[in-house]
Image (cartoon, rainbow, N blue to C red; front, side, top):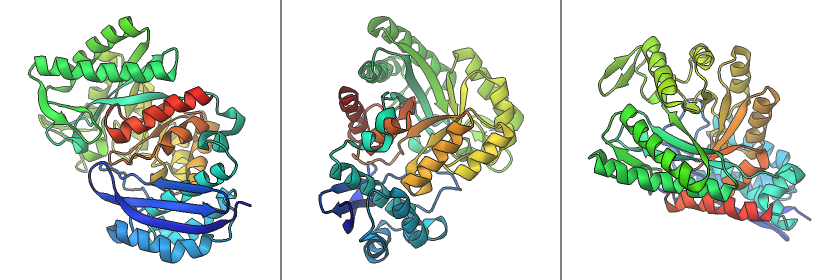
Length: 396
């Protein structure tokens, strides 16, 4: 029982219309299907997303190299499956592509869960999966996700307190809706939305934060929630090797830290992601000591246990962003999470800008006990995760 009998793969489209990998794993009585997202703003230390940059070559590698290694392996032995994927994938998963590997890894977990008649979150998290995470949603976007928008990549909102995940999801949706209206009234709406469904605005960062704060106050009073704001600077995308380049000029490291600190203080931010470039562990540590907001590393850590250990040694941050396709397997993801949590770091499980409709992320976030799931607010590929949270909450 549980032995893998067949592995299949194909190319599908992500939310940007780019090609990515979908995999299927079959056991005698189980079946799992999973697809991999792709990021636009990526850390240089992530695994290679596709073999030779091609989703088609990753699919070919799954068919020709991966299936023969996995047929006969028990799908319930996730560590053995992922070790085989690592061996076939090679250094940085260059021979398969991290997106091909992670699709197979997650499809295997789904197949094992289905064979046992369990939802994925319960199969992965067991009796400890008792709390559904609240969404951390992108309200206004710029950077690599919206070229006509702000230099800062994401203006985020999350319910710090709500009576349920459903309440948090509805509150985020209302903030997104009202923010769009206010930006339009102010003449600050550039038109359309970015990769993650966030509004694109021509206003500067403080003005956008003012708008979102006012909207949050209104939604809090009406829906009985407590909301907080955050920013994802994606600072490596702004960094030219010596300075952080904004539309209105350059900021050196000191000025960048002062800018981040001023926004945190002026708007009581609860969350700041990647405020400095991806190799500046010392700068992260200094900034973390200067602000009350949770400082979270994405490109800094890339869901890599070794880099998280370095961050812990230097006291570089407060939390780690978790993206399974950054590391290539479910086991690698678990190792990163355990390293973070064992050392008192928080985690935030996250989508990518180029997403698919696969809702596995909601199950993984619940299984890991993540307090927040960063998955956007609107758009079919984002809403699929949010709606799955509501279903999981009913099951729990």
